[in-house]
Image (cartoon, rainbow over all chains, first blue to last red; front, side, top):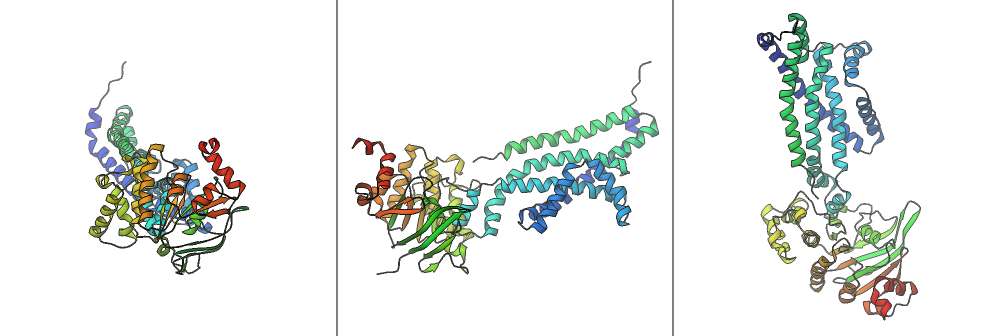
Length: 221
Length: 250
């Protein structure tokens, strides 16, 4: 007997899915903000030239870049409370895990962006009599930022999809709602297909935008 | 006898165990044009970069107009801006237009208003024959044009000395002349200049004094006719011969 697709189940539960989607978007924005801020601090620590700051920053970056996001999420949700005695809600645990993960990658984007600016640019600025701070602000950063924007945008799209991992610790976002509805309605095929379509429909335009950004900010020297 | 504008005493520079400068002494008078020649790796570029401490000298002193550049308490940005520098690798700021490149120093370092900086920059671009390229980004300029903008950018700080570090070495041959012309014009106007170059014709025509560098030392020094025609040092004669074909023909 052929399977009969019943997408009216999706329509009927649309409000629940939209609620989950709203949470997905909120998680993306919030963890991006955390990532941008914490990542900048970590990058500055690594660039500071002081071992006492650079070494912990390097350890942080490498830890988060070399372990799976799922492991980080579960670890921060289950192990960290046992070690510290402070239990965070699934939402905050998830946010911290995602935010720190993004921060580790952002730190590398900042750092390589700044390093990618030719040494001659610094020399030229210094020769004009600029201080280190002026050189950074007027010459290095404007050029570095142009190189940072495309990889940051790519990171954003990946982040938008990766929020789905937080369903495993009970954060009520799009994927969590989907799993709930799938078992509630006995219609997993329709529900998960619909969710895949939603992720695609939202991520694809962003991905196109990323390609545009890479084109727009292509370094011309 | 007036105080020399630039005085270098016993300048040493080492990179780790590799010594590139062995105690250079030099006094430069106001308005003097000094051309530094010598084989690559002889230390002439390092010497220039030690003067404004883009390279940190290992030992020795540099005085600009009586102020010790190498002093512990020196305000480095303040002395650096009095020494204009032009580089082999152009190093224009790619995110700024030609005009903005020239305005950047007066704006950021000297604190001029935008209007005043613009006026100064426009005049300097006109001086290097690039008034029509004011709004052009470096990427759209030829190497020769970029290097002339770089000269204007350095002049915008109203420097006491100009340092030219092989400024035509990275250029296509047909673009060399336009840059040398600007430099000759500057020399004629009385700018004090230290020029590291392989353009011997420039040295012959413009230099007041030529310094021959070899293995971190000045091995020959004198007016161009002396160094180019009656070099006392065998090493200098060989270097000059290797440099040009006509040297072999005569």
